[in-house]
Length: 269
Image (tube, rainbow, N blue to C red; front, side, top):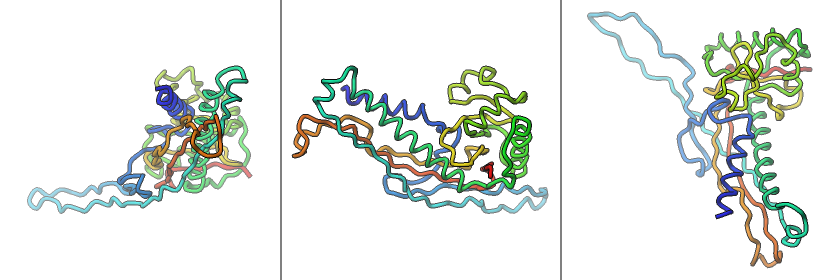
């Protein structure tokens, strides 16, 4: 019973620690079973066309333009840490619970890094690589907003992932609305504020020299599947370890940017 409870707590904490949250930074729209190793992601890159209607002849139908991207589930990460029974008894506190917590955090961080890597490589890099200052940051974010609008990205649900350094600049910017001014429902998603129509998330896993990434969940997909939840497994009968257990877990997942123009990446030189 404790094993199942711990596993659920670790999984819940993992999801809570992730910046790239379900339905806020990405979507989960795909067809197929991730356990098969490959899924199809629907991509509709054009809008429905509008034509003049003729009362006598009507209007000819057009075929839809939805296409599908095949995506291999290529991220396979695991934790496997040995815990000796004597160590558990000889140290203060609950060593096992602590390692479970650490395992969940480690997997969360790895997922963040992989998500940021896909956003950075799959998105569109902005030409401006000048270092940001508290005087220029708002202007650069507005420029990104304009580019997304030009690419017909909906204004609702736009997000902005910022590095800790850029978040510090935002806190000094008069245009930035602090998290205290957000509704409780938004704050609970991990948002730290809003600016220029973006919900802002501080992301410590952004790649080197990445200042911010602006986008919309419609064009960033995560396929996620637990194959083995984090748990404490007894190693009795292993033939090697006596009186020991291991914190083990495995996560299989993948990320995909489906429209480069809808994900903008601001880097500095």
